Length: 366
Image (cartoon, rainbow, N blue to C red; front, side):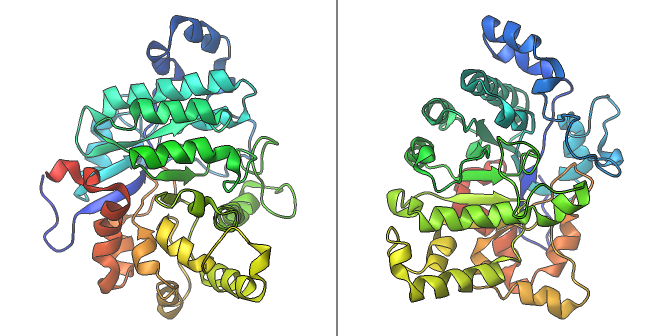
């Protein structure tokens, strides 16, 4: 493929493929599970209608394919509409269909559905074009089953991450240790993306202060959930238990690191006994084990304010480019890359992604 000569290869770490209908997943599960899922109807679908109403539309209208179906449901149109125009060498696919399972009470059904989604996208997208790479989805309800799914699919060509769906358990909890152990075993990072259920259901985490009143209020304060889980994983010793584990925080923002990192370090220095499971400054664990995607890139009023975000400690190695295609707030790759300091562009474009995901993230260029 042709790559822009004036910039490095580009890895997009947040692209959402969708199915035209949830019934597309049914051939990829057993007959008994298919009968079970057919009785659940729309309640099992990611795009549930009982959450906060979006003021406009969730997806870009220009991303709706002529072939029909929702935006992001046509692989050829995704290539034509998003990847080819910007010469994106690799897209990390984060399917949204499994997001709804965080509200399910049946752990076995949730695991079976996630496995079906993984098989569907591996066969229909990943095998179709080497620019498509998948983060397989695993349910948080049964970590043993999730670990088995990681070992089943974790070595497949085109699988570069593990999309762990967030429920009410904080990520530093030992509840997730079987998942982290399996991820470390197969050498894949954990990818954490909002499910859309945060602040909506008791089976998911919510922002501080209570239930948001509106979509806008929830959208503004949702980064609190991401920040809280970063702190929880560090202070509860997740990276002492799993020193090779990497975590990719997608769509949680990153500007809040400017206050979070020094605050964590200061409190640890003043009272290290409050976090007896860690052996060094909290910010060191964040720099070694976390990466954060650019979207949604903050757009402050002045260039100086924007540039201050790129002076956060170790941010040059912690940022990954992402677009969030095909959502309404998709970030234009050219717009984002131009706003990143020149000294960081190669790292943000692909080098940091290669460090976290390995060379397999650029299999289309091999």
